[in-house]
Image (cartoon, rainbow, N blue to C red; front, top):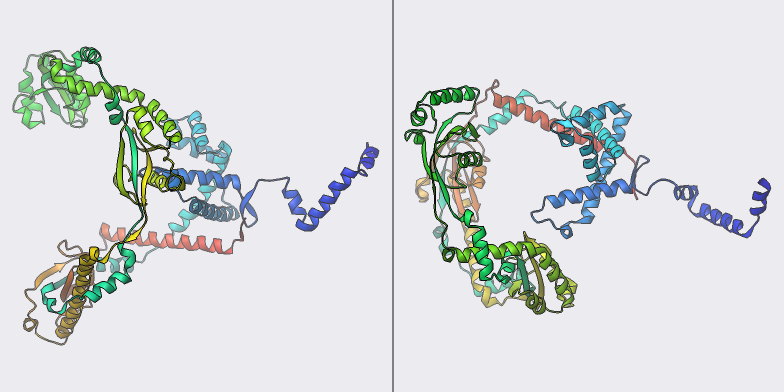
Length: 616
């Protein structure tokens, strides 16, 4: 055999293979050859340990599903795939760094520990007992194997051990908690007076040149965005039902089938309601014994029932039909014969004994009275049965058609119109991002195709096409002149109020008597905290940012888009601190938690900064 190998190695094919190996080694090195025959593709390495592409793509898929589940209307095309990939890669790198640190510290979880954790997880249990079939199915739904899931749990648990240890090591000095509580509970005595627009009205004017200049400088704000006028077909249960013709014979048969349901039955009932608790069973047994002894239901209702309104009437609730009471109460009531008393019935209100005292049934209304409603109900029922079939039919027809009229006519649907739809959407159904994106796609906007059939709601689908495209255009000055003038007037008014307020504050701080400034009536606030509902958050923030008054008052002003307010701070009242209170301990625990979280974040940053990370 060795002789055969030696002879074959001298052949032409062998020489070519050896030549390729030599070239590969000279250019890429031995790793390129060995790596090509072993291992999985990698997306990154952390301190020499790889993050495989398979692991990366599995987590990307899970993260995409998670973000889709958070959307009100899940739409795959709205996901930023590049952002998800970046976020997942950074997360996996961080996890790898932390796992390596845990290994270096000798932290580990045995197989028995993993088994104990898994069997205790509620999502893997049936009736409170671990179920291996549910466990395997759940893990597979995550896109993982059982072994991979166990290793993921092992890594995460030891990481959490370090995180918990560091985060819970945070401490907070009692003095810090006391200072925070003192600030939080601090109150202030102050006065405010508001400057009206009329105080500066004579200083505000807007010229035509200013309007024109503002228009030119802010031209982009006065553009009408590109828009499309669309034609579209809506397929819904209601729309489909309108196309379904119900014959008189079908209506008569439907009426006869529903006759028993159409005859309304009402029951007059009384009840005894008691609280649901440890004594409920004994109380109900006592009531039952007294009923069996011949005492009246009404007398016992007056004595025992906590429903005081009906108790005064002997428990009488009057007549009621279906869908009035709690489902459990209703089911029990409609299963009783006249005069019969139920077993105890539990609802969210308590425990009931129910007695039916009368049953009355109304005659079935004539068909003429119910015709319109029954015809609609029957059409809708048939539409529900046909919806999926018609949806597929519409999808196929709209895809192959160069208009909407033909599919609509063939299926008996209506072609509707909507104008002024922008890339941001429009009125329903064009408030659906997926439909709007299709409408502005190259195929639809430029090439004139119909959109795909888009599901915009439950049992509602839409196909559309562009009827007309309107480019973005500038609104003429005359159309927006009034708005611009109002904007400039408000801006100048606020600026004038700001200058006026600053001037008044300067006068007050210099010792000018407030009465001589003719500011109007001041509003006084005494011993107020940080949550005065009648004042804006911005004004309260300004009040509590003013320095402590030494002698007299400290003045300030708060100017917002709504106007200007002068503030006179008269006193700062220290907040009460009870070091034995729950509030004090909660604040101290909170500060310790924040400190622990900061320590853990710093620890993660330290590990990350010293790691050798290579993104491939």
